[in-house]
Length: 143
Length: 158
Image (cartoon, rainbow over all chains, first blue to last red; front, side):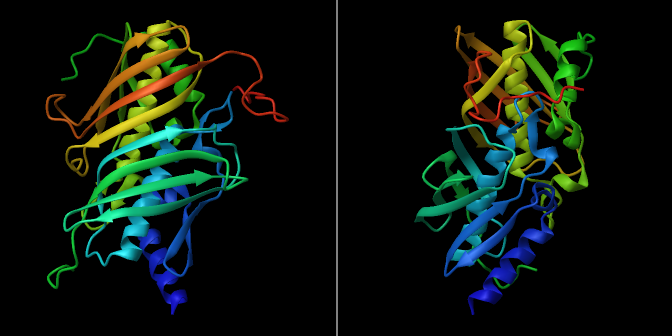
């Protein structure tokens, strides 16, 4: 059932210390995942602007790509970023953020993924990411 | 490696104090010279992205490179300012060494009146053996209240 897939995904995120630092959790609708990052003060980049740190928004979308890959492709280990390009469209307000990843292509070793992050409105994204991720396909030897 | 001259600490330290994320992750400015900035982050357990290997998350490197790049813009400007990242491209060459502090060296190689162009590299010991490299563009924000309508940027300050 999809519920256990969501549990597995959140258990995976729970094991990643940096995912805990960011405070992210995953919601699943079928095989489509939305990563949720509630606001926390430590995510602010500059107290004068009260905007989310650009690196936090980038990391959040990177994590969405990695998590979506683990949902869609059976991986023994987390996919690792090879390169990512982040475009910042609006400043990240001190509120909950969402991210959804779309896998454009999965090869044997590399996947191409696009991610979009938004806050109040899906149609007003705060940032987008596209990148390549290295895949480690499931192997029986993996612990 | 670290026999660098002492940095003019005031400006960068003030900037990191003004950054809750920089404080939470322990970012520290090592050096700030004309149009360049070098930052370091200690290895911290909460930065780990792969619990099986202890390697820090790519996102930590992302944040450090973004932060160092922003400081390089301040260095080029000669003063802190409000800036926004327009885009950031990162190439991850290899996994960072577990347990090692990481450095980011950024150079703002071009500054127009509204845009800063920056290249940066992240490494543990030697800049010629990078963990990741970055290319970033920043917009300088004027003091007009244009960012968040209805929610003016009232700085909490310190």
